[in-house]
Image (cartoon, rainbow, N blue to C red):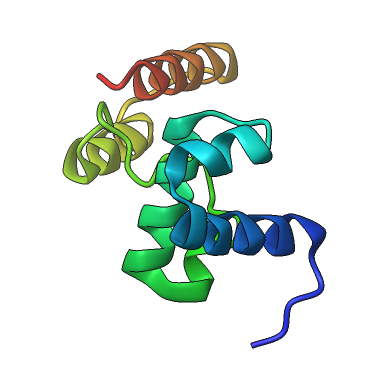
Length: 103
């Protein structure tokens, strides 16, 4: 597996140094902290070389998401009520607001 990313190569050298010299000397040699060396060593041990690649920092789930059944009801509600264009826009604004808040 050959990757031409300088950050990957840096992390790989850090892990190899930690295996040979130990965690504290490696942290000092690479001008970083002990927890950082531990983190990359642990990822390398658990995931292999792919553990040294960048990982997404985005959330993988949304804690306060509106249930899809309720969301579907709110989307269908304006179709069942007689509304003027102005009240329809206001209703859509309210629905969007409550969906954003995680009702």
